[in-house]
Image (cartoon, rainbow, N blue to C red; front, top):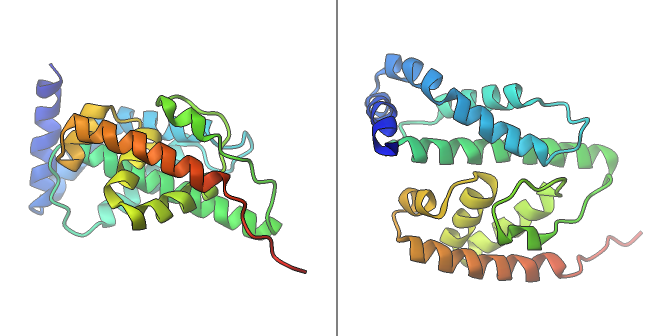
Length: 195
């Protein structure tokens, strides 16, 4: 059944990749609910008084996606994975800006143990996790992508394997290794700025 529900978005994504702008316009209504679900997932991780709302996050991600130069869209999952990455970047930019304005602000520690299962975590320090993911990407880019797709994008092991074009077993191996690596990275004391 999932294959049938993916058929029309996949055809439209491929047409969009080939320059058919009307395909893009027909695609968004088909995927809007899923984009909004991703945005709500992200917003649950944010502080309650965040200036962005889920709809605004979807709209900003959409604007960035249509500016992406000639992506060869493979399927619905590939599109949603990139949308999840865009949403994460938007929120990271917002958090970095907020922390700069507050000169450190009230950062919240990330509990890496919550990465055990893809869950609906409460508040996170997305900046610290983003920095750790960047460091992980220098060590192993695919492991970083696995965390981003599963934890932030909410993709299943199978969907992540599809996006990355690897086996589900590889995703699980990378997932376990990445969690251990990130746990170590996030627990390391950060140097403090001297006055």
